[in-house]
Structure formats: structure tokens, C-alpha cells
Amino acid sequence: MNIIYVFYENFKKIKLAKIKFVKGKQVVIKAKNAMGKTSLIEGILLLFRAIKITNPVNVDATNEKTQTEIVIGRNGEEQYKIKESRNKEGKTIKLSVIPLNGAPEIPSKGKTNWLSNLVSPLIADGLKFFEQSKDKKTEILKEMMGLDFTQLDNKQQKYAEERRYAGQKSKLLKEQLEDIADDFIGVPDTPVDVAKIQDELSILNQQKSDYINYTKNLENYKTEKINLLARMKELNEKLNHYEDNPVQDVEQSKFDELVEKMNNSNVINIRVSKKKDAIDLLAKVEEAKLQYDDFKERIEKIRDEKINLIKKAKTPVTGLTFCPDTGEILFEDIILDEVSKSQKINVSMQIAMAGVREGGLKVLMIQDGSLFDDEGLEKICKNASDKGFQIFIEKVDNSVETGNIEITADYEIEV
Image 1 (cartoon, rainbow, N blue to C red):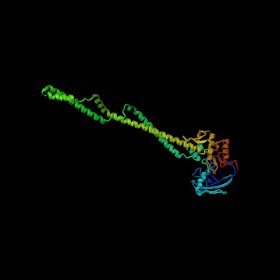
Image 2 (cartoon, rainbow, N blue to C red):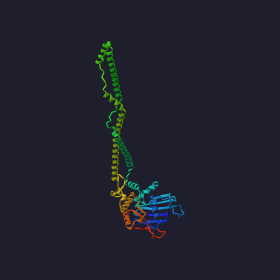
Image 3 (cartoon, rainbow, N blue to C red):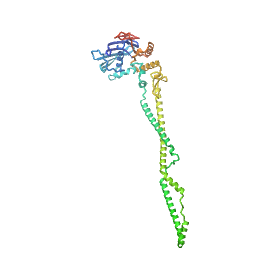
Image 4 (cartoon, rainbow, N blue to C red):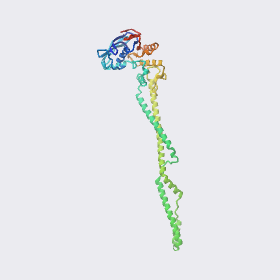
């Protein structure tokens, strides 16, 4: 559908205007600055909810409200008359959508959504797509392509955070392991059994005590043998007994070894405990690495899922797609913001036109037409006309008499 008729009363700089577009697609609105060119375009945009205006009423109006009426249709046949009045704060007082020539009724509760859904998201200026932020451009394209990565992006962000944490944890644990690795050279795998050593030392101490007593007694008996011949027989018997039943002396080296082992047991056991902790730390490093690899694999699967969704989605412009890794918009494999000016203009217009739903209002505005030469505008208009779009172009023209607005078109108009 296109715009067939517009009517303004007390709208911004326009006190009263009636314009009927008989046929054709291109409208050029020319005047000096501040004469009301933009008001003509903003009246259309406001009606179709493409912009918001807080004070739309003409400053000289005696009536504190503005009224707009637009008729839309196909091939010159009127299908809907849309009438709206607003107060000076810009709030709607009354809105009506009247079907004409057998057009279907619009539910009263759905009129506002119906109006906003009729037009392209870029109706306000088909060439302003590139002035949007990166996030806004991406949002517009995803909506047009039916792509919703919200859940995938949330998962990817979560896995990326967990992967980053696992990587940091693995790195930290490895550094801790490297710092203490030399401390465990020669450290046994099991701790020293202090109780066992104590038992062995107790036995050896007893043996040593027995040996000392044995030696002492032996000497006493020998002395008594010399000094007490009378008791020779008795002492000889005792001597023979002791000689026949000798007590083994303790091996000093073994005794010294156990004493040293006992003395070093605390140090060794501490080092054994640390070695065990280091082994546990190594296991945690391996576990963190497995977690990192797992999250990496999950992120790759999400990336593949995004690629498949992008491939299946219908792009509004041939050659336009998304980079699944960076989220950058690409045109013919080049980052969109880096393409040539002519390509930007072409892509922006194609996106703006693709934003109109089936059966919607094929209307676009160019609010800075003065920035383009005639050849550039001609290409833009031809591109729009080939696809059945009606295009309104606003241009500053100081040759137009002050107070007037000049409207020219590639078709007939009635003012």
C-alpha cells in the first residue's frame, strides 16, 4: 500500500494542508529551513507510531489540538482512512481506522499495533540504518530475519565465564604445583610410622639396658671370683650360666638409624602430607582442564547452532549475514560498517524496504535529501520505485520563497 491523501490541521508548523497523490511514487518536499518541510514528514511518521512528539500543536493555533488524516491504498484505490487528533502534550485524543471499498475491519484494540506494523522500522529515514548503534543494527536485522539468540547468547556467556574461571583455576593450580615441586624430591609416598619406631626403640632400649646390666654383673662376678675364692664354685656356676646364655648387644648403626628416623619423623610426615596435597592439586588441575575443554566444546556447539540458524534465516539483503563469533553484521564477507558509501546506501535502502511486512505500507522517508546529488537520489528513487515503494524526500532549497513549501513529484498531486 501507498499514501494517497494527507490532511493536517494545526500540526507543528502547518496550520492547514490537504495533499492528494494521484499516481506515482516519488515526492520531493523543498523549502528553506524552518518552513515546515519536516512537519509534513513527521505527521506521517507520528500517525504510524514511527516517532514520538511531545508538543505537536501549532503554536499559533487557537484550538489546543491537532488533527491528521491519511488515506492509504493500492494502485490508487483507497482502502483505509486513518484519522487522529492529539492534544498539546502529544497524547492521542481520538484514533479511528475506517475501512474503504470492502477492506477488512481493524479491531479497535489492535489499531495502534496495526499502524506500527504497517511500516518499516526504518520508515523515518531509509538511509539512516548505518547511523544506528551496532547493537541496534543487529537487533533490527535479527527481528527481520526471525532470529532470536537470547537463550543461546545467555548459554554462551555462561559457558564462557565458566570456561574463563576453569582456565584461571587451572593456571593458578599449575603455578602452585610448580612452586612446590622441588620440595618433594626424595620424599616417600607414605608417612613415617612413629608408633612403630617408638615400639622398636623401646625394645632396643630394653635390650641395651639388659646388656648394660649383663656387663655390670659379669664384671662383679669376675671380681667376686678373684676376691672370694670361697665362693668360686658358686660364682663359676653363675659364670658358666651367663657364658652359656649370652645376651646379644644392639647394633649401634641400626639404633642410630631409628633414632635419626624418629627425630626426622615430623619433618618427613609434613612433607609427605604436602606431597599428597600436591598430588590432589594435580588431580584438580586435570579436572579444571577437562572442565575448560568441556565448556569450549559447548561453546563450539552453540556457535554451530547459530551458524545453522543464520543459514536457514531469510536475509533481507543478498550477501548480508552475521558473524557467529563476534556478532558483527557482514556484507559479502566484509564488516558492514567498512563497506563503501554506495554499498551502505544500497544496503540501508534494501533493509528499510525489507522491513515492510506483507501487505504493509510501502513508504519511506529521506530527511536529508540535500546531502545527495541528483544522480545519487535518482538511483535511490529508482531502486524504491522498482519495488513499489513511495518515497518522500526532504530537501533544503533557499530558492523557494520564504513561508512557502514546494512539493514536486514524478506524478500528479492536488493541494
